[in-house]
Image (cartoon, rainbow, N blue to C red):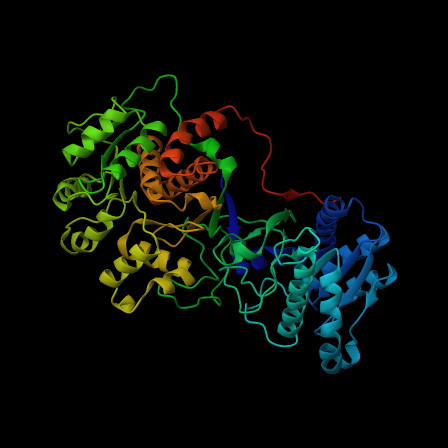
Length: 565
């Protein structure tokens, strides 16, 4: 099952009853123990032992700094050489005492922080660039991404020193990690300079190799921006009580609203804002049961391809066939139908009932799509609208007497989403592709809210937004997916997921079901593209990937859960 991730406000609200009950010290010790476990594992993997490891701790005054100091004390007791930099001059009292008792060296003078911060920034940065492991415990989940001196000065100096060392290492063949130096950077709960809720990154921010997050997975670690700089996510359970809101609605506290206005001061809800979906969830891909037949397995209609781009229709159709639909009906251009049947003779080209439609890939004729679009809207048939079908959507929305089916999925890339929004949203008249790429969460949610459809925004880190604002965040795919026809394959997979996975029984959350199935389609697309060099190669790998998943039993979460010890 997908894993929930929460806003910073929701996590703080869940922590508060435990803090009120006097369990703050216990929570911190559990968090620090889990953090130390991850650090020990990283050090053993990188250098074979903990003894003699050089560790630099950047510690702030809050609980994250306390977690970092307690974990550092644990490592110092095991023989690591620990140096602490406190650029804000204040430290968590218990954490500071524990680190001092364990033999840690402190660089900064809390008595004269303004003088000490500038004087020690260069020294701390140089030590960090030479360290085996750096612990980032500067700020917590409530901090804004914009950093001011002395933190911005320190991080900028450290990253410059790391880059210089990386150049030196490149000449000697030494290993380099994500931030450019050979040391490992471990962020405490969230990297400094990253918004824990939205994933927004400030101009200056920490780039971690591993982020150890406590109590609940933070939404911003899995969204564009934050996900690129958080590294591998390790989770430490603190026993927080996080449940969906009573009315079943989306608990979106801490998020920009659909209009883009901040709502951080509203009362925190406790349900998930983001569902994180990865390879292990592909076990939930719809599969036929022993009593299924071709109709109950799902019938998908496809209108894709044209005389100019017949291959798009072939790729979309074959993707759906290999993904396991019970029957595929291909409509539209006769040349496309012939090409598809030549590759998959089981495909049907006569009209008939379907459980879902996929249309728009490869510029099919608008009149071919409009006929079936109007019928689908009238009957509430699930839809996947790609490329050419997206171009028809503004006109369709302006004249339709019924809303889009609640299980409609739009599959634009950033350019197509920009074009759609400029045509249906007066407030987005001046929107350009760069705006969408710089804030994909906002604009995907905006489009979903305006159209009433699920929006699957394609990109390096594909994002899925439901009309009520909830988000699904599939793990990213390989670079090889950036190839002509890859989007056509994905459209076929999403259609197959809707046709085979949605049940005729009414559900309280049809859009959520469609979004979850679309996320599984993204994961299958990612896996099939691991070794492919073309869209045809992706198609050919789909059935093999599903067969592999079917033979894999439950072997754990695969999501980096860390048990403190």
